[in-house]
Length: 104
Image (cartoon, rainbow, N blue to C red):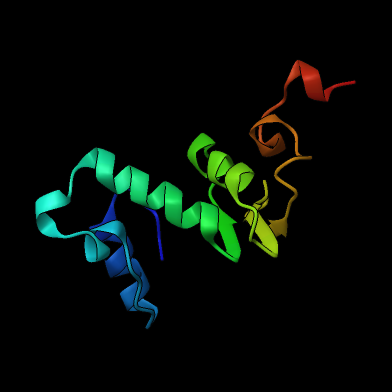
């Protein structure tokens, strides 16, 4: 399952790599698809995932904080590698930007 604001791009990208994905547009009936419904579905799906690969966004962080099932959380580091992280013990914005709070 991929939570995204550009399902068409993600489907094309993963298809080129030989992978099929599901998005909220695939699981929500067409008569209930709206931006709010898709966001709510994405948030629910990510907050229940057993393995969460999160983007560096507040939306992904919120879903990671809500998730009580995941065995592992991964996110992209500053060098582009996937690294594990603890959503309850990670610097603001995943440490991607310098913050006065991180300079102690």
